[in-house]
Length: 525
Image 1 (cartoon, rainbow, N blue to C red):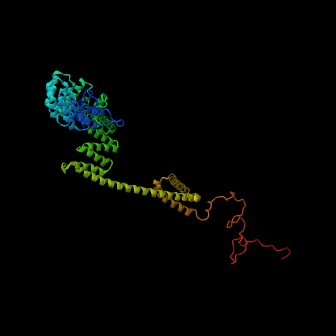
Image 2: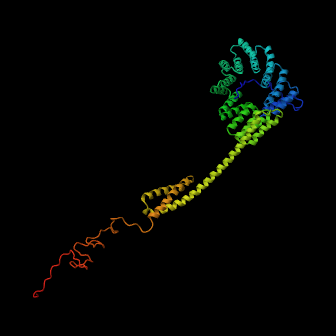
């Protein structure tokens, strides 16, 4: 997380309107000066961009033609816009040298020195002026800020105490003390001094920024965000507040807010590399990989020493676009740009090896994914073929069941009908994924149907159950002769029986009653 306290300094162009340019720019400093102003005041109508390079060339020409302190100042200002801090330092130094009373040049010169880590030189720029103007508390406050940046904390504290003895309600002093304690890692005192500064000046945007950053260090992100929001409420395009809000949003994964914050910051400093880096990360988080890559390329083009930009560009292609060749090229480009400067143990080589390993893993993952896809397509094809087979089998089974329902056990017939109906529903719904299960079910029930038909439904129809009346539903009429083998009616002799009283063929007496005697006719003896 970027938590450096960001302080705002005054930067301004000359106060008087330059003269109209003359025709000969090769000899006329005023003409070049005015031409530079014209370029700054004529941004592109479509893009809104300012051609700072052309403007710088005009101001630089004016300065070289003895155009004075303001020509150098404007040349320094446009050099800053072009991210040329050494060039800006040179011009601001010359402007301050030509006119030691020109405060904008002094402020800008000291600020650029501080931005380049030349805090001690920045202190010297202010020191001479402060000694001559001890009651200029505004400049003395800037002097304290320079002492803090140079880590001359004891001198900064002494200067702050000296001012407070004469001006105890000086909010700027407390803001600088807050920055000093922050630099020392004493975040509690830093927050207290910031709160005191806001009591004295509730509209101090810089102090809200500083307090927010301090609260981040204390782990109170919600309170920090509230301070940044307050700063933006007071000035929506404040560079430092938008930068701080942007980095907080990146760390919390709110890439939409980060995008808006860094975009707003770039409206104030379109060439700021830190803002571009933040915006590139936000774009990556929003899956706008093309825009993210273009921003990294712009940063790299402007700063070949920006190792973070090379690394981030590699990460973009390594993890997000999966272009491992391109990722490796970014790291190799950084190595090539720094011959004989990178140790073999540098992390960049481990990063390249990690990319190579990820490429191998990604290729294997793609191979497995292709195989999985092939198997899935094969499974779908088999299921669709099985579904067509089920349609044919089900239609035949239903027809066979319908034709033989009368001769099959009714409970079995009902069960078979339910199974075949389920199979038909799957066919009608084209549920190919269920085809294997239904096919297995049918394979179990179709043989049962075949066996039942074979056992119960072949040959003549079965006899009617015992006691069933004739087809016409009538009972036999009373006195109907019995069928063959029925015992004879009482007193009726059997058809094949011998006459009563006739002796058996073997002469054996029978149990029949003795026949009555036959009487002789009358008159015979």
